Length: 285
Image (cartoon, helix red, strand yellow):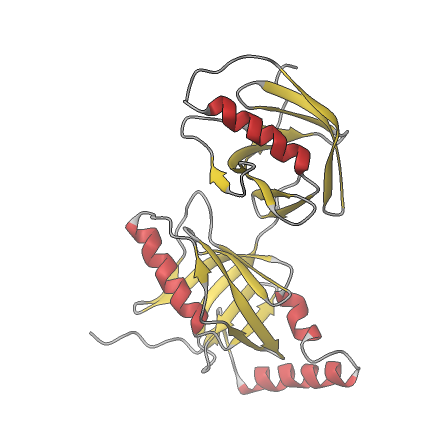
């Protein structure tokens, strides 16, 4: 079966000779202004969260699957991170003008997901190794191959606010050098208010204070929690103790789309959360 011909376009817009001429003219003017060769081009690409909307298959451009966790990539200081919808991806990249090269040695976690999602992930991973250029516009980001054919298309993902959101814990640092998934059947949440109040639910309800600004995060004073012993799921009390310790070690935070990550002073992950819904009230209020 013959593969479908790749469209020679960026999104819905043809890459015409005039388009190339205008783009290259802008590039020349910006370079003449003294900006580094990669700074102007990378400015629109980097430090933004890009949610996958389409990816190339033999059948042509295919819409990305709707999933609990959308496929999101981020380009930052030569490092590519994110997910194709299932496993986490990590690798390197270089930018030169509107040319983009992604390292073929992408690292990935090894989690199994439903077959359609795994098929998407495989197609996206292969496409990333073929990327030769990019185009950022009001419509989003398009990654292209050496012939300017669209391989991957994205829209910018707006980050969930830190405060006023119910954050559901997905992973925590167990204090033994490992970040592990929460126990099945456990439901730990964290809520942060604009006035610096912190509250949540683990095995017990807990509350305290916090300070957050410009990516920095710290508890303000000790956490207070109820003293209930939780019989199930097995190990939930130990998980709670490790989670509270992780919160106390937190020194920074970052939000990528609907995921919140707390890190310690050395940049090590202490806890990962997924946005659930706006917080209407603190537990116990």
